[in-house]
Every structure is written in C-alpha cells, then in structure tokens.
Length: 218
Ligand code: CA
Image (cartoon, rainbow, N blue to C red; front, side, top):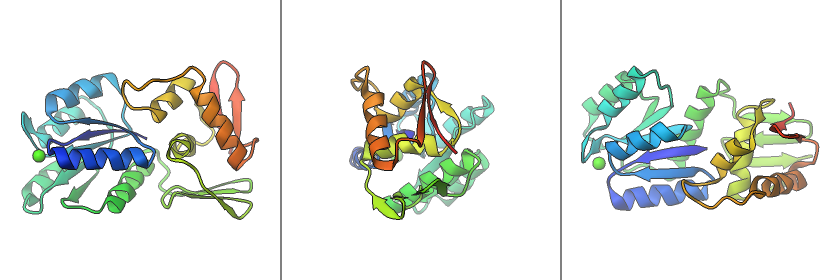
C-alpha cells in the first residue's frame, strides 16, 4: 500500500516508517499539516496515519478539510491515552479507526489492513485463486498447500492485485506501490518483480495485458 504518515515525534515517526517499509508499504512521512496537504495534493494514498497534535495545527482540522473536499482516503488517527475528546472528534470528523499510543506495531498493521480492505469493499482477508490461498491479514500464502515466502516488495505488489482481483493495474500504479517518493525506479523494475512473483505463485495467475498493465486472474 501507499501510506502517508503524519507524525511530528521524530523517534516515533522514524520507527513507524521503518516498520511500514519493512512490511512492504511505500510510506511517505511528513511532520506537519502543510507538508501533509502538499503530499496529498500530489499522491493518491491508500491510508493516512494521522497524529492529532501537530506543530502547525490540529489533525482533526486536516481531516475535516479532507472530508469537506470529498476526499474519502481512509484515515487512522494516532492519539495519546488522555485524548478521549480528540478521538471522539476524530471519529466524528470521518476517521476510520484510531490507535492509542503507545501501540503495538502488529496491531497497527492489522488495523491498517482491515481499514484498507473495508475501503476496497472486500473485508474478507482470505483469497483463493486456483490452488493459491492468500491470507492478507496474516500475510501468508500457500501454493498447492505449501507455504511460500514473499519478500516485502513482492507482498507490496501482490497486495495491490489482491485488493482488486480482476482489475487491470497499470505499470505506473504498480511502481507507486513499490517505491517511496523520489526513489529510483528502473524501467524494468515492475517486470522483474512480476516475474519473481510468477515463479513463486505460478505463471498463470498474473496476466500481462500488453501496453495496458497486469491483472490478477480471479
Ligand atoms: Ca504530535
């Protein structure tokens, strides 16, 4: 997934970004509302993680602004234990979920995935295609009953497909999923990862639509 993390505590922001990247999510980290607005104006995100007390304003105001513009990007607010009023305001302003600091990284990941699945209209984390079983919540995949291990980037790619089975994804869409802002993208990177995925999960599962993109067959 492509994630926007808005958090001004440097140690926490760093730790969260490193964790999310390691989980295969291209994550942009900004530390204030101005930079968050700029990032969201140029990039479509799958989920926004929003701290509420920011140096140039309150996260709930950012969220209200988003929803007022009709932006429905899923949003999880990050709050402190004593910010009950803020949590209620956040949920009323259109947040999809919240986490109370300090939170467990595994729980963050579970909530992120659940929110993204609900938004994609498919809350079921289990996907079976032919002899391939994918558990998006636990991040495990079985091919003909045997567990297959994927790297973080292979998951990032598979995630994109699994959340929209049958949809054709363009190469730029898949590149977005693979890389952080500004990172180098080689012209054949998507092809390389598609080919690795096919080796692991079977060559028939992902079709190439020449000049258009790729599709996970249902
Ligand atoms: Ca803060």
